Length: 250
Image (cartoon, rainbow, N blue to C red):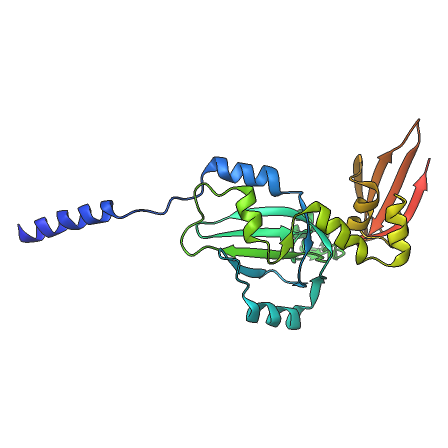
């Protein structure tokens, strides 16, 4: 009986303790809807790699890990560069924010399929081009002391990210333009695209495109942006490895 009374009492204590609520589905949806595709200016240099920069929910950067990753993997995003949030993943006690595609090389799912040709009673594998897209972005991992708050808002998440990212468009547009070469500064102010610009700089100059087209030719991945202009005119901007290589107007 004593053991039973102790067990019942223990259950009562457990139920009386406050439990940390997991982030709600509505809160997740609001953050995904609001923050994904949003742009910000990097306040510090961010590294290549899949581990990501670690940030506490109090806004404290894991500085030793950051310095180690920068030294080992190199810098992917320089201070002042305008980046885009491309993915967000939620866990019980952390949120992972992917910037400009993240710091991980990605392969098309077709590249995981082995193709072979018959040679007698054997099958010999056929060589396949490595179509791995070279990583260009980085990742931020926000670690919470307990669980991710159940009612976390997009503004609260952006506030936590402040040591790394400036989401104030007025600030980062100015910072981003100031970080450009004089030639590109002039082009952005004139709302023109130039050969050699990256995606972020083109967006600063022209805004987001009306459409995007992607293809791979001779093993080279290209992305073409379409801007509809006055009348029946159209502007096509072609990127290779995030750099403008061709501009055509029709």
